[in-house]
Length: 255
Image (cartoon, rainbow, N blue to C red; front, side, top):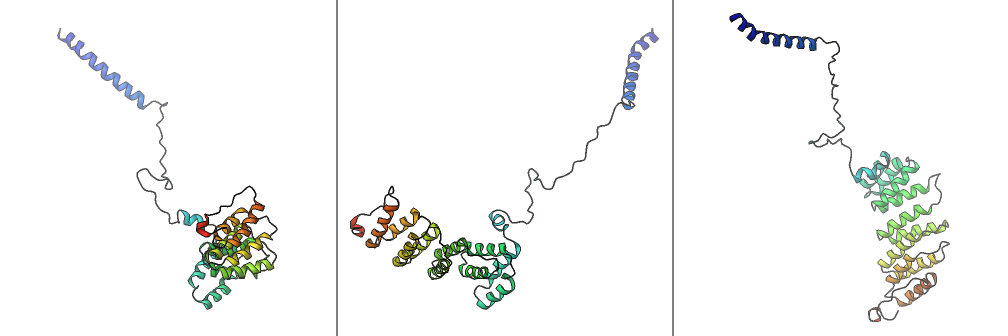
C-alpha cells in the first residue's frame, strides 16, 4: 500500500520535471531557431532630438543670411572698407584703387546696389563712377535710375540732377518711378519750378506717362493754382476716365 501510494504521488511530479527538461533542451538545441539581430542605432546629429534644443552651427540665420548670401566675400569686404573710410577722402580713393578696381562686373554692381540700399549715396556715386570707366560698361538706364532714386530719397537733389543731366546726354529716358521720385523730391524741398521742369521732360519722353506722377504733382501744386491747372489739363487729356480731386476753395483758393 505504501509503495502504491508513493508511486501515485511521485510519478506525476517526475514526469512533469522530465517534460520541462525536454522542452528546454529542444528549444536551446533547435537548429531552426535564429537569434534576432538588432541593428545598432546610428545617432543622427543633424536632426533635433525631441526635448532638446537644436545646436547652432555658427552660420547667420534669418534675413541677414538671406540678404548677404547673394553677395560675394570680396564685395562684402569692399562695402565694409568703404564705409570704414568714408569720412576720409584720401583713404577712400586709395581703397578704391587697391580693392574696388579689381572687382569683377557682378561684384561691382552688387556693391553699388547694396550701398544704395543702405543709403550710402556718396559712396554709391563713387562706385558708379568706377563702373562707368570699365571696358564692359554701356549706358544703362537702370543703373542711373536706381542711383537717382536713392539720391532723391536722401534729399540730395543737386547730385541727383547732376546724374540726371549725364543720363540725358546719353539719350536715356527714365521710367515713371524715377520721374515720380524726382518730382516728389523737388516738391518736398519747396522747388515747384524744378518739379515742373522734370514734368516737361516726362511729357517729351517716348514712353507714355503713367498716372502716379500726375497725382503727386496735383497734390504738391495745390498752393500754386496756375501750375496745377496746366498739369490738370494734361491729366484730363491723357486719362479722361480718371478724376482729379479739387480741394475746397476756402483752403487754397480757386484752382
